[in-house]
Image: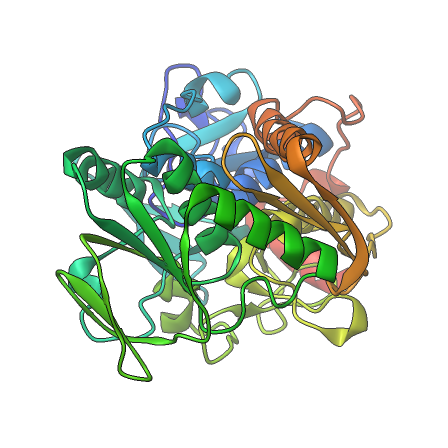
Length: 428
């Protein structure tokens, strides 16, 4: 689930597939695939496509704004002062055939099939594509609350997490108020409280603490919050943020030396400025193979996509949705290009993994459509479980072409780009 502040690096050995031309010497026969965004979904999709498709037949370009992979599920750890292992894309995609374009996406023209990129070196780049994978993801969402953008810190990405890290490092005493009772808010509050026992940490939640969890899950949350000394303000919708406090809908003022805003995510705005069919919130409407319902040469994955899951419910913004969506989209693209069978794998949920500091965790088991069941794993074992999930997700991104069949399939007819694009649409 990542936005365009996460990145890639154009490196020696992979430059040949950058730009609009594809690999030198075979550009006339290559189908050009451009992947926008290198968070969990985008990076996984690029690697899987490189493994599925023959290198002579396709040119895959991955576009992003930073030189290494950001483990978004660990931003609360980064903010609390922990150092994360660097994962340069130049190493991760070396030898895969994936070209890396370092830059910020500034526009997408789905009629001309082009992407505008502002390169970090000052270049203005225009990439042409035959198939586009849109994975720009999401960022923090202040929900229009007065003062939130000016006075609160968000941890939806690395820049925000680093700013909060610096602010906490300068804070000798006082209260840190985390606004938001979802997964991000729970993880941020417990991580900060554990790392900084000298601070008074408080959580302001619109509803009850963990009110979507099972009774066992809620009881464990209360136990951990009590042990860490986290002050709890339930049913306290925050309506204003100032430099030294937050105000709730019922008129309460909660003093705050620093405020952490964790009330949800907003998708990158670029899709809404295109001719793609999007929801009111700017998410791209896709079919069961993650393909745009309005433009069949565009696929959307991760937080950027509005995809329906079991029970006809929208998939939530999460790594748990984004990674299987990336698998599905990559396999669908490969099948349509090679004349294979298009997959119809349903995306379902199994559990919600919540870290509560480094020593505690909560694994809430859920139904396929993400409703809590009575079973839950708690304590140290749950913390280890969550850590293995995080490490596994990062390992999957860091080894993009491992674990898949080694036989790369040839595209049908090895047609020129324009003809190949038409063949894809016609074969749907």
